[in-house]
Amino acid sequence: MRTIDELLAAMQAVLTAAEGRALTAEECDSYEALECELSNVRRTAEIIARQHAYNTPTGEPIAASRGEGEVTEYEQAFDAYLRTGQPNDDLMRISNAQTAGTPGEGGYLVPETFRQRIIDRMVAFGGIANAAEIVNTTAGNPMPWPTCDDTANSGEIIAEGGTFSGGADLVFGSASLGAYQYAAGGASSLPLRVSNTLLRDAAFDVQGFVSGKLGNRIARIQSTHLVSGTGAGQPLGIKQGLTGKQLAANTAVTYDDLLEFIHVVDPAYRGTATWAFNDTSLKTLEQVKDSNGDPLWRSMTSTMGDAASNGRLLGFPYIVDQAFPDISLSSGVINWGVFGDLREGYVIRRVRDVLVVVNPWSRASYNEIEFSAFASMDATQQNTNAYTALTGKA
Image (cartoon, rainbow, N blue to C red; front, top):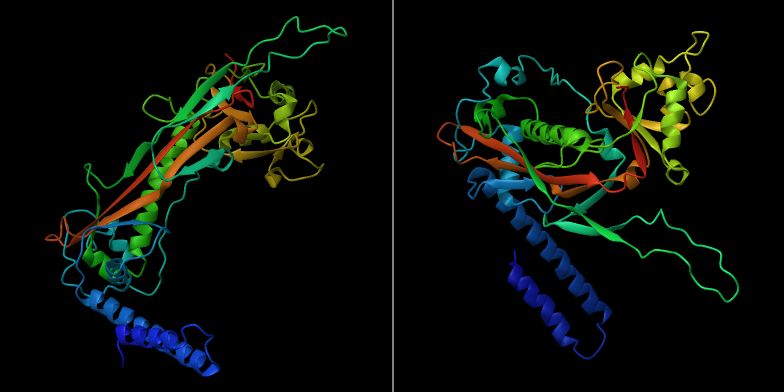
């Protein structure tokens, strides 16, 4: 079998021989045959290198971002070990976290039979992130932008040959987004540690499962900040600090309350308006009744007779975000939801994707592997004229 260098030299020789003229049909066939042989040789070399990496991996701790860039030979070897459980002398042990011997720490993943399923409790979060404007950047340096509110000014009628008698200059402000760093790991301020014994014996993609869980932890705290973050050392939440339209009474939510919420928002923003609240508040709204005691929800949807799950309230779609508090009917003023053009009103800045760091070396003598996850994000209110807070009665 010829080497890569020999094949490249032969391909260049074909081109050199035809310098100054078009290749003949025979020369084209010869060159393309060399290309095909080169492709096979390179592919063979890559396969051999991967197999060598599976057997004797070397390198630094992995920092892998899901879905970004090419996977290195070592990452392929490490991933193959986690997925297949084939022994690997260089991937040793790490300490007292998730182990195969203790059921609650991972032993339940080692199957006694062939039932390959993880019972994973799910909790909904993050609805606002689906409605707000998202800005993705590759770096985390401050990102300012100008603002201008000129809604208080308008033109005027003047006499023929006349000029302005009033008016105002444009007044510009500014807003900025940074990048708060979020992290997720294991207990005691340490990375999440998973034993090689568990990775070897589990009938699941443990690497993918652990990475997904760490990513969910970051998403969960971020979703809380997107709703009620203080803006001091964390993002400013979409409902934070706003004086919204209050409920008329502290005993129930009425049809008239909902109409008031809608008409607080200028018609310019209502064409793309959305409700946002948690599931308990949704249940409360579904229980609103007319004077005859009949539920009003169906008549609030876009078409008479639609089910509540249709996803529209008084003609506007809604999203459920569990980070919002419940409707407050008697415990004082609280912003329990928002309504309006949320994409115009709120902006989220994300820096790259969630970074999952897999480190097989720091605790190798304990035969465990460390997992950590990191992400950078900021968010703020960019146009509070575009939406209003839904507020409880004082």
